[in-house]
Amino acid sequence: MKTTMKERPVTPQQIKALQAQFHKMGFSEEDRHGFISQFTSGRTDSTAGLTKEEAALLLSRFNKESADRVRKEARALVKQIFSLSFRISCLNRNYTNETPEDFEMNKAKINQFCRTRSKFRKNLTEMSLAELKEVKRQFEAMARKEEK
Image 1: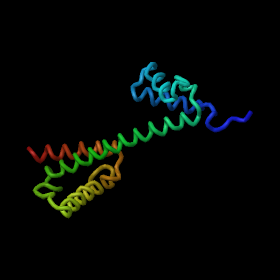
Image 2: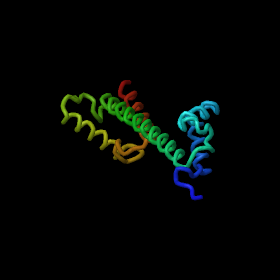
Image 3: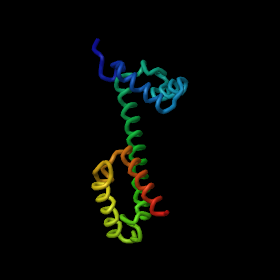
Image 4: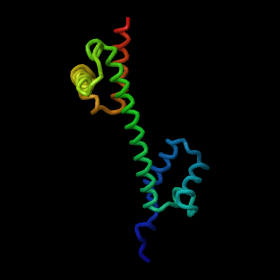
């Protein structure tokens, strides 16, 4: 009897990835079993009982949620850096942000600064989350020096 794609069992790699993801999300063993039971409409409560397709679907959903969370955090950091730039004289201090042109000019100054004077030598919008956190610390230090 030939098995279809939906009936193929979960792979060991998928089990490891799912269990790591559940652990990362703080699920207890009981929570994990309950989640899987609900996801499979009671068919199974174990990662080992999932089909290959079900495991792939869960992993893709977890990865999308994770990427969305990172993107949201990065967007918040960029806004904080932009705000800090208005406290730094070599950037946007004493400049307005009232028109779209002002906004674009202020953004260009920050990107120029990041390309020439940050550790990463690239535009703010091209930086990873870890790089943005470090640049934010750099901007915070600069803003503190300006306030003294």
